[in-house]
Length: 100
Length: 224
Ligand SMILES: [Zn+2]
Image (spheres, chains in turn cyan, brown):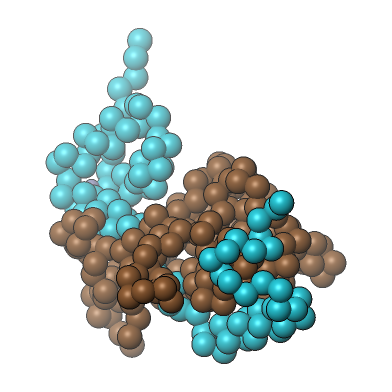
């Protein structure tokens, strides 16, 4: 005897979307969700929003670095270079970075 | 004017080289090698790429933004001094983040800071008042973009997402930053933060739902 799962309502469907986009949903739950998505434009829109958000996150660029923070780090870099002497000057020469 | 390089996803960006007028693409490892040779532009470029994420991940372990910034700074100096050597067993990014996490964790332990392990706020992904009693949408969402390609180039959306991630609390902010901004795998995020994969998924679920909600608010122009 097999129990048929009741169809998902939207409130339940949106809770499955997170694991769905991670590929972490069981095959059975995946089928249930996809069945719902096929006939529900609203939950499809929700999935689209989540997917767009994740994609946009990947392009949140490195430009949100405060100039003072960057210049502070560059100052540290310069003083370290000054301390270690002037033996290495040609940046294309490998220099002290390569083990010999 | 912020400039987003679409190539950043592959850890590659453009950097001018002094020799000749040509601009070449430089990946993380080339920059690392150049730093060893004292190349300041290479150092600046790597800092630009990763410093914000280092600070965010450090903040997960330590008690203040100032301490988190110090930890990230120490991480760079360790890299520059060659104290921690990259041996190619992971991506450069993961290696760098691990140095930062190790430092942050030992400071956090000294501070006796409780690491935010599990989000106790177990609310629904979408506020209950958006559904009727039967669980169907009464205030349905509309897509933020026509396609993924369009989402990536939509400056308004990217700005809204950036703001939303910054507004997250921990551990959600750290998890979303590592997974979605830096593109690490769930497994790598779990290792860096000392969480189980299942826990990372739960936190990611909450974090992404929150980001979506904040972005929707912004994109609809609901201001008060
Ligand atoms: Zn639905």
